[in-house]
Image 1 (cartoon, one colour):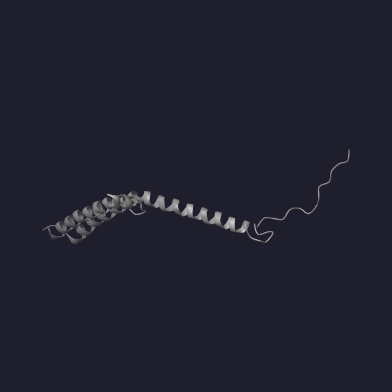
Image 2: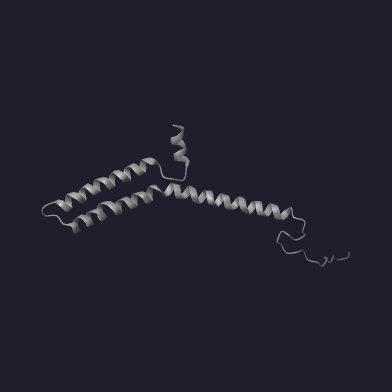
Length: 116
């Protein structure tokens, strides 16, 4: 059970999705074989059956089922970029150079006050 939870928390798709995709492709291949070997069937009809009943629906389902994994990967990449930026800012603050932060230096002109 622990291994199954680790699989679900990873960025890959759950194993049940692969089982459904493989089963559907198997059914479609059997339909293609039946179409190609039928007395009034054609190889062109079998190819069209494979594309319309196999590739198109499986690709749509696989894309939809993979969406949560892609979102997790994008979020993890954004977090890693934020941490890298934070680490870079931290190292530039602790540097010994006076203007290592990349900000413009302060204005050298002093402010003028009115006398009362």
